[in-house]
Length: 322
Length: 171
Image (tube, rainbow over all chains, first blue to last red; front, side):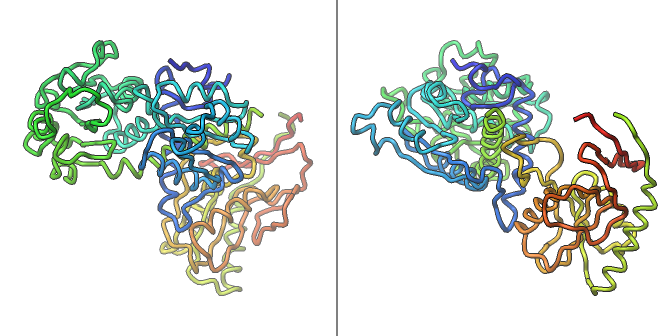
């Protein structure tokens, strides 16, 4: 869908962050390295650096979100930007204003960056093509297409525990079909050189042709996580499934729920991740979600640093190209 | 590059070590902590640290997030982050850099230090105090003073051996 002529400037620097797909490995590593430097900001008395002082960031959420929006909000504030959170569902589009008109209104307020979540795939790219030069767009999740900052914070979390991407087995478990997180993660893992990426789930939740992304497909959880170093559990997105593709949550848990006995099939030092929010007792057992293998809360903390990195890189690129 | 010349760095480090010692004594600065500004300042701070008692703390500051030219040069994902392995609050700090020029780096460094806490005092120690200040900032201890033209640069090369190079760039 997107390509690098939109995301990168002529020197290959990040201008918008819409998708992981087609981004070079060096740029993903640069995001991780930059994020690493931002982690220390959260440990200080003043949890703020003045990089984006005087810049205006608008969080444009056409779809509800708690943790993504709040961590983007916090990331922008820790960079000293002025932030406005706009829940468009309850806003002007209800009154019939078109997306392009909403954007022009917000641009007239001298916005420097839009963070966009939208139920339609491609909406952030559409916005990136509409905005004035010098304005950045960050994709905070669009339809089933991409959620690049979530994927990068997951890569950051993996690298903290398992720095050698080229020797990892990573299993992504659950509702792959409805998951923009899974799609972005597969692209990121492949670009960073992970040799074995597995997707695990019932046939109804695995999109056809997923093998073409270079992943191996498992329908059985225990063999899917066998020897895995990293297990990424996805949320069962019940609200996105129109037809009853599944039996009850209880039934799903019996077949695909990650429990402590099943986790023993993975590598002894395996880490368990989940983008949240967790459905306890549906895709993951509480003892695993809160257990010693779980890095789920670290993912949230890392999300702030990764979003600070992406925002400062994009704004820096745009500012220097003015 | 032309007109390259060398300056004896070791003698300058000795001089600022002695200068810092007498300043600490004169002002009765107890329990000082050294903070080097990356990268040249860290090299000098490490050398000064060796001269002071081992319980003295030494920290490293990377001012990339505090530069006043972000909107002209963007972000530099280069060196290591700041590391201040001690509480700066109520501490006498000694800020160490290799070259004091416009004063902008020192301003950025002080801004960053105050985001870690409120120090009792900050002293500025530099190897070379060169002409060209753009801000009202002065060194408390310096190794040498150089009057250079706008197109001339002095740079500390290192970490071992430490060398100062002066060169004129075509501007």
